[in-house]
Length: 596
Image (cartoon, rainbow, N blue to C red):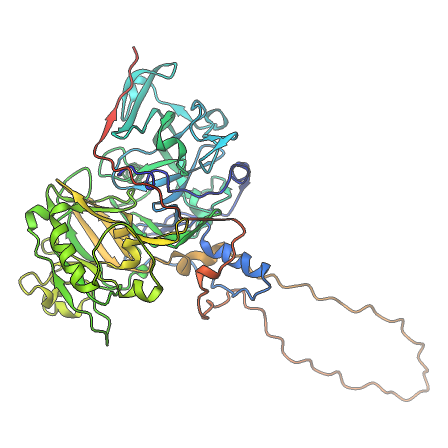
């Protein structure tokens, strides 16, 4: 994770302390569920459509019905949990529910670090107190959890035995950044789960036979998580919106690894699928999906292709063989039909471009590449666009944005993983094919202007968040991951890449919609019967058979109408994405606290 004023501070539900406190007090019980024979599980968070529909009701507009998906196995996924990701101000985060009863903590999903940590009750002036609320939730209260354990010194999983913030003989560790931010924590353990409804805790539920793609079954997949209970925060960690961080690096203490060790997932795999909106709503803006234990191919619009992860442990690192600028833009690696989209190869030295490797860092907002790319990139940019490339503000219409060049990265494949497409690579979206006949099964990863240009609502302009300034390595941050589902396959030491719109709500949002209620039939009151004349002729007629009444549809079809313009939506509580000065993190180091 590269710490910047934007990336460290920008990844949380801006839900507010009162709503968050109320959420932690509400517990609802649902029928249990567990993994099916293939270990399939799923859970989402409250998505963006909930707030869209509320706004439509306030405006008197029709609210489209949403489909409610039946339980079923995820395609091509041997053991997965799928949950929605929320968009902060650049980074993405999930809900982590900790303790008995569960307390919510929002955590940045960070492939650039390994520890999960968030502020606990012993933290003072750490961003989660009611009189100076920066974070989304109040501090985690250890005493309010019946299942919390403070780790003893002979059971340290990350740090080592020492004193910290007045506490003696605790397992302490922390993280420091060169620009001055840092945090310190002691090790704790508690029952935890991720996902489920965003503002409602779930009680522990027993295992059952239901498939796991229902968010209301999330707590069935709880496990004991070792984490850092933060007691000291300095700098940007104090003022960021997210409560904490979820480490997803390839290390023993990472969240996915603990989940695997607890036998919640069957394989050491997880995938991240990022999207982005220009505005962020305080109640949560759904912006992608996170899958634990595999991938859900229903999110994919192209085959998943595999790149080599060049590092056996630590940060996930890829090798970029070539870079291109494509005139006319475009989202996909396959050029748009009928458009004159010419692809230009950049004359960049491959070794200098990669340096010590290009890491995939989901906890960093922006993308930072080698300064060796700057000269060729800027020269070709000016030939195509007619103006110089820079990171200053610029006013762009939607048409001008779409016409800006799309950046193409040609990534070295994992040996043998893409061989099934050898015969006709040009027919497969995402392969180099005739673009590089010498390496036709290399992977083409796109970064359109809508991903590297970001809207600054405070200054009313767009700014490029691609920086060509690095010396020894590159960092592909969240904006370069967007529009793809990235599968981190640890045991196979590879990274899968598939194009996707990352629309979690389209697949799973219906689970959090209530069943349509059928109003009770109002019976007419009976009139008193008149006295019958036994000698009067009978006037009784044959009873009329009423027409068949169609039963209400309990599972409405998905709304197929046009999607609303997000810029025209009126949110009850909306927070825009603000630009803040980037403070680049040149080094990150772990530290252990020992005052003895």
